[in-house]
Length: 188
Image (tube, rainbow, N blue to C red; front, side, top):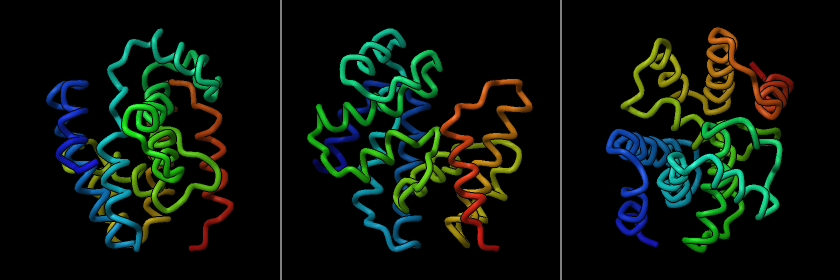
C-alpha cells in the first residue's frame, strides 16, 4: 500500500495530536533508515502503522491477544503495551503486511526485546525522538541518534527505564531483558 493510503486508513483511528506524532515518527524513521542503511520504505510502513491500535478499547485488545494467540504476557499491562502487538496483528490482517521485520518493529516499539533488528531499533528510537516529542533529555537522544543507532537505542531504553522507575511504574520484563541484551552487547 502507498503512503497516502496507509495514512488515510490510520488517521480516523487516532486524535490529531497522535496523527502528527505518527507523521513525525514516519519522517524520523525514514531519515534514520537512510542514515543507517535500512530500507526506508519498510521504516515508513512500520512507522505509519506503529500506533494504529493505541486508542482501541483495552478489553478488545486483550481479546485479540487471546484469540490470536499473541504474547499473553502483555495482558494486564494496559494500552501502552497492548497496542504494539495488536497493531502488528492489524498490520498483517488488515493491510496484508507479511514482512516479519516490519511486524516486529511495530510489535516491540514500546517494550523493545532481545536481539532487535536494525529496523526495530529505528522505530523504537524514532518513536522517542520525533519532532513533536518535548521532554527533558530528548535533544540529547536526538543527537545520539544522528551519530550511532546502537548508542541511541541504549540511551532511549535507559531513559524509558529511568522514567518508569522515577514515576514508580512497573517495568515490563521484556524491557529489562532488552536493556540487559543491549548492555551485554555494548562496545563503547
